[in-house]
Image (cartoon, rainbow, N blue to C red):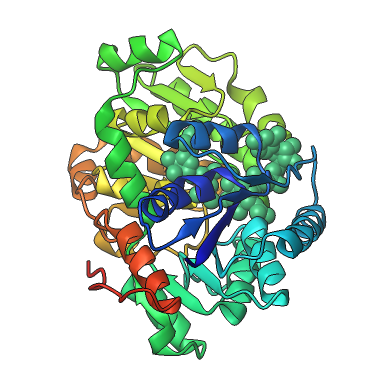
Length: 380
Ligand code: UD1
Ligand code: UDP
């Protein structure tokens, strides 16, 4: 029986890998060996706990203030040792984190085929998002099977010379994860959030963490949020703060004492998706949130200059607004006050998936390993 090793290390990878792990574990054609790097700790464990995933191997690499090279070298060294005792027939890596690219490189060096989930996203700017654009391009160079979430991401791969026969359009597994979680209406651990949920108040849900936004841009985000909170006293801003201390130091000082701002620890995925479904507007620099919010019909303002996820921008539910303080205030207040404008953005669209991406992933892996055939692709 062929063995497949999903390798992941951060929160978004864990969320997007969970449906794949569960489909592999349910399929008796494969042995599934879950390996985590521990690039994230609390934020990773929180997701694995929710989805009932117990990793077989944990490299436990996290260090406070870890550099990109720390993550890369500690992952490659850990996997290098692991592959000498447990060598799978293929690995699955997800997306564009440093865990993902390091996992791909380590496998490639051991002659293990790499299956790349969420392949082909491109902002076409090597420095934004940094280092993700470079990470995903590197992985594309060495992967054997490229699982593109959309036809746009497939076209990006073909333009870079990837063979069409090695690409499958699966949709993004984040939609599988979202659809199995959001309807459960998981209760909030924090009673303040449960009270907010039943209050009917307008909620602005905010997340921020991008490496290239850290520092001045993120301090500007904090000031913008403070101004929005003051201009919109009936609004409640909810900010689940990323664990990265650099993010907290930059954003929190401007907002933490405001009465209509709630800063929380990272929310468990079930609680976060429930908050997403309660929110009026979403303000974020996250990749995954840009994919999930449109499918719940939530308008998203993205605090970035570009995106590798153009589909929802084209559909009109996501708008790129950059990180200028003035512009964040202006765009957010307009969306909160102008109901016609709000309605034009609040359309539920599903350009990123239909909930069957994991099934297509496993079928494509089966074909790669000669134990099955691919199934029909995702079309949006
Ligand atoms: C990483 C990924 C990024 C992804 C993001 C999702 C890279 C280079 N970056 O960025 O692509 O969008 O995850 O959130 O792969 N920390 C903890 N506990 C945790 C998680 C983080 O303490 O559970 C702290 C640590 O001090 C750590 C720091 O946050 O050093 C930064 O974590 P790191 O994984 O290096 O970068 P992220 O900004 O989280
Ligand atoms: N998320 C979560 N709890 C939170 C904030 C986000 O579970 O407090 C989820 C969110 O639903 C999405 C993913 O985390 O699926 C996005 O992770 P992040 O923004 O850290 O990374 P990115 O997607 O930008 O790589």
